[in-house]
Structures are given as C-alpha cells and as structure tokens.
Image (tube, rainbow, N blue to C red):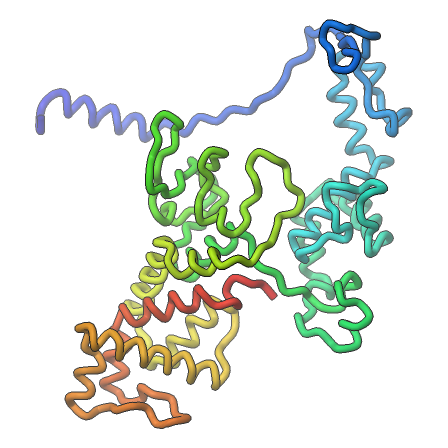
Length: 394
C-alpha cells in the first residue's frame, strides 16, 4: 500500500541494493596440495579393462620442449609456459593469423583451426613468422598488432580489381586489393544501432537478454528490450537453447562448438529479416526521429549526412537524385494514406511531378514539409539498411 511502512522498507532496500557493485569473481585452480596422479589406459575404451598407467605429459610432438612430465603438480602451469615460450612460436602464429583474419576477412593461413599437414599453406610464410615474433616482442599486445595491421599499405588498398590481377590471382591470396566482405551478424546489428543514434558505447555492465517472442522461465529464457537498451552485441546473453534470432540469421556460429572461421551465406531469409524484423524497423524509426529533430536546411544536406553515417561517404549526383526521387515516391504514397506533406503542397500549386532529370523538392515550403515528415525519413532509413553497401565492408 502506498505510504505504508512496508513500502518504505522496500524502497530503502532497493536503494541500498542499487549502491552495491555487481559481484565479480575469477575462477582459478589451486593445486598446491594436490599430489601427482596418473590415469589408467582403458583398452578399447572399456573402463573394466585397465591397461598401463599414463602419467601427465604433453603431446609427443612437443617432447623435449616443456617440463610437464617433471612437474610436481598436474603440469598445467608448465604446459602453459611452454605455449608462450619464445622458442615455441606456434601459439603466436595461430593468434596472429586469427587477428589477420578479423582485419582482412581471410587469414594468411585460410584454415585457422588447422596449422598441420592437412591445413592450407600460408600465402606469406615469412610475413606470418615475422608478425608472430614481433607480437611476442611487443609483450603479446593485441592493440599493438591491430594498429600495425590497419596502418599497413595492404589494409589501406582500395577494393578495385584490375583485370590482370584477377587473372593471375583470382582468389586474392597475394593481396592485390582489399577484398569486399560481408560484416558479421554482430557488426550488422551494431552498425544499425550506431547510425540510428541508439548505440550505447559504455563498457562493462551486466549482460542483456535478447528480445524473444516467447519466454520460458523453466529454461531461464527471458526476453529483453527489442534493441537491447542500445548495448553492443557483445553484451547479449547467449543460450545454446535459444540464441538471438537476428544474429542466427546472419551466420552466428554454433554456440556448442569452437569455430575459428564463420560461414558466410547469402540466403533469402536474410533479406526478409532486414525488410521485416521489428529491430530493423524500430531503429529506422529511431534514426528518422533523430534526423527530424536535427536542423537541416535542405533535403540534400540531410541525405548527405545519412550517407556519411551509413557508408562513410557522400552520394554522387546520380545517387542523390535517385534517393530523393525515392523520397518523393514515399511521400506521395503516404499522402494517399492520409499523411499530407505533398497534398498540402499540391493544393497550393507549390509542386507537381518533378521534371525528368531534375532533382525534386527545391521549393522552400515543400522542403520544410518533407524535412519534418518523420514517416518518410523512416522509410528512407529502412531502405538504406537494406542496401548491399550497408552490410558489406570494403
């Protein structure tokens, strides 16, 4: 009851609860009191047929390169130390190759999970070795490695392909251009949040439940906000029973299996998702809301800003004319359904159909009506989300 002592105590409890930091824990293993133990070899996997005892050791291929067998404990520490030893660069090579793959779309070794004889050979073996050694010299700094890659001439190349290069190296293994690639599921979602002005760039915090149409308390599958409160996809809770639907559409890896390289598919359901998913629609409306409340003197100025936010470039004359014509058609359709920015203009003879080859909406009062038409800009934003250039990186 309002004003009761129970409500006062509850409010006081909530206030104290909100002031307590979120608990954090670090899982570790203490082996100081554990004696060295071995395990019996089970012949043909039969637990009732015990063979010889096998003591802790490393793989035979690493024999003589570690001190696991002579450890007084389980050997985990000695094995970890051997993996980061300067004379054992395999760990650094694998990690550097993964980072190269994240930056360029394809690793120097195209089989990131297999550096053995059955895996692919590196396209630039000397470069891979040098990067691995340099990575260790820089104290295993991922930030330094990424800075090194993005400042390279290879990363700063254009995506244009010459005819001669495509004939000699069609797979682009020699890196004669920067290959166009589709963004990952998380990058597509985060990009929509960013350009719409909804992205929350803050770090850390509790995970956010993805939006679900149906909750299941028995499986602890609860629904969160449609846009995840603007948090990056990194903070979405992942469940193997019900992963986020939007991310699954764009090839989110199987959460039960390790995956060094994601599948990249192009299927109709992806286009349908970008057209009909409530998340895409809501962020398009949010973008339109932010645009309308921001003062722009002309339609062209606003469209240029949208291109810069979505594509990192301004539209050329043809693109600008086509997109403004699209906005004209949207406004006409909305006017027929009851929205009246064009209808008001037509009644006052301020505009008719735009002449062929000319950009419409140059009349001052009509431009003002269009700049204030949030529904029209929402549809334009939705269309930009659905362009290939938005979900592909080049």
